[in-house]
Image: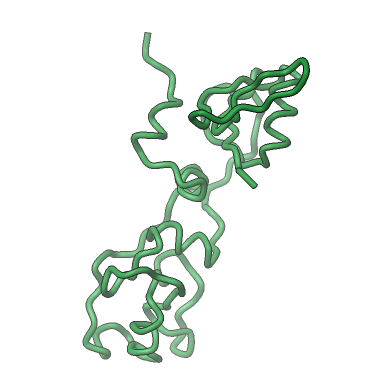
Length: 166
């Protein structure tokens, strides 16, 4: 099922919702379509609506401040674009830079995406001990960045829904 990015009235990312929920919000005039999937439409007897990729709420919704994006295995793979941090091939697992057995935790700065072969090769060692070098350093995405990355939008696509300065 397609996911749709929901923006606040101030154009800040809020959440990702199902296509069904996005259509309901648009039909109830609670949101407007900011970006649509090219060539895809929802049609019924009295309805012809583009399939929304990004919608914006008509009224501002106050959201409690979220300082950090929640860590998840899927989030690490998305952050690293499913590319192995050691060789650059397709990654299917995550690896702890400092192994869990040595006190390394499940944090954004201690986990990277890795292919199965490199994950096995590194095993229960640090990259230096295994003679492996990280191609990219792990970083902690902001909550908004994590949401946009999870939906698979690139930077130039994300710019498409920002307001144009007057």
